[in-house]
Length: 404
Ligand code: ZN
Ligand code: ZN
Image (tube, rainbow, N blue to C red; front, side, top):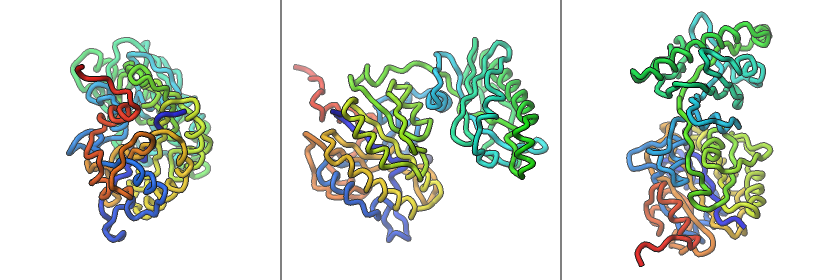
């Protein structure tokens, strides 16, 4: 039987919204099941990284799993590649990539019309070899991809080719340090990008897209360079056999970098339309063969970035009804987020987020509902992301004696 089920609702925390009578979307949502767990559990607030830090999803997940990002974060790219199912080797340099549309040297669509199918485009530029460096291109969802460089003398100290804006030319990749490896890496990468864009622009699939009035995927942009290094596995650390249920490839990548088993659920897309019921049902099924099941839900963050507080509230209500599946799991159930994302600011903020743990051996507190405000008076107090795993190991009764 699983000992721990951890549910991370991305960007769960929020700020008061005027139109919701100054409540947060979580506080305004009707959520009898989450409230039930809070009432029967221990609650608190969590800064996944630290006060005053607005965390990215990658660093915050590492921290929640007990891995200090200061030590174990090596950039976003490797997580994307791992999440796409690629076997990275130590020394590989990986990037997030996306197909874009360029016209007269200027980016006119950073997402190439949110490409429905990227297979032909990925295939066209996968496997190129330049100056003895092998390039692997892995498909992501829609316009997204990951790019991996494998070879000698590589460095991740290189800039992005993605300007994060439209109407400008993709910038040339530059070395960020004066080391030979950074200079070499940027030069080879620029050659790859130039060659790729040339191949892409001549692709029959793009002529077809133009004919259909769609923006061609004639350019690949890369960002978030990181060099892959092996990390001590979750099992080595905690002796817990772990599984991950997530839609987004980055989350799968973080879990894979820690040696977790990735379990695919049909319809788990990492979007607001994801198959929530399927995710929780699978979590329950997995709980018979794994000690730790991590469930990631992205929709809360997506609505926040869109400023759609009603959508976020309704999505939390959907999570609430689907999570009833876990009522009698017998495991420690943890529900929290990885950071707050404000619907008003449409950005991640440094506000702490609510957390609750319910299940066997948990000392309850007087908190009866699950929200930013109610959890502020919970008995767990105010913790950091790195405190979560030690708290859980203690609840499992496995904390080592300090002293005699
Ligand atoms: Zn996040
Ligand atoms: Zn976000």
